[in-house]
Image 1 (cartoon, one colour):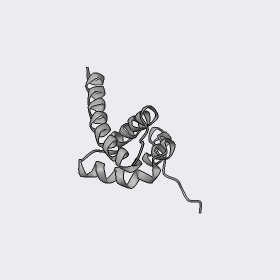
Image 2: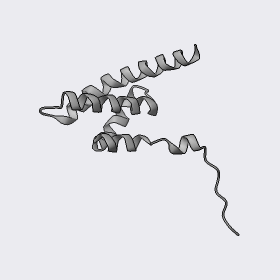
Image 3: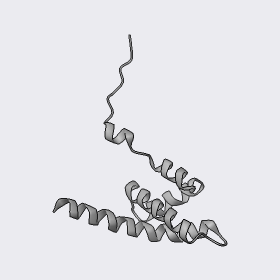
Image 4: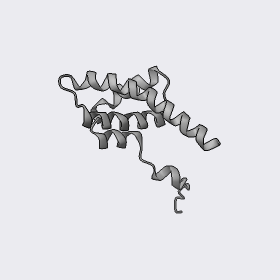
Length: 96
């Protein structure tokens, strides 16, 4: 008897996962730290994705000179707040 596969929503299956964003940006080694920071401040996965993209942009403009982990922690917390604001603003615009 053949096994049947459950149909998965195409939109959700085509989206990159959080881990893939961290791999592409080069911060995969800091993913556990990022998850802990986001969890401590009640951020969700979409905000983390937006934040790591913003961190990557800042990394290319102003790379860390001494301690990459401390730099990431400081910038990621800052960008999490920006990401939440951007996502909320986008949702408000989409409603109107």
